[in-house]
Length: 111
Image (cartoon, rainbow, N blue to C red; front, side, top):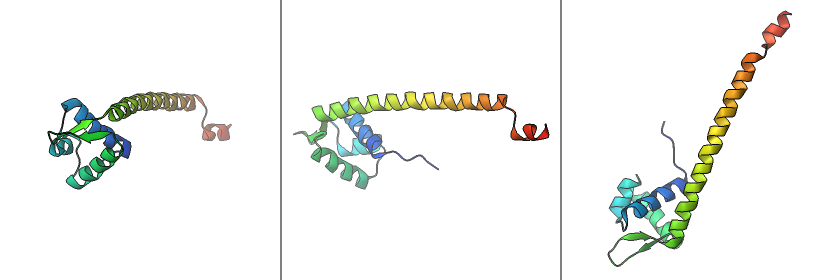
């Protein structure tokens, strides 16, 4: 089964498309952010109301300064999450190593 994206990840993906491609039209955002047409329109309305995107005279969406700040903060947040996940995985490995060093309850019962 596929992994679902969080709302924050979808917003960041949409803002990244606009940021990476300059001004973007709906179809480009939809394809590059991997969204359905209905979901795209719902999110675009939310992002416009939040002031993260604006609509310019060329009929394209563009990133606002608030959108750029959101994207920068989200990228920093993502890096921190990755570091925490790596650290957590290291801790799980260390726990497994420690568990292999301990006698099992069956070995203790035999004595």
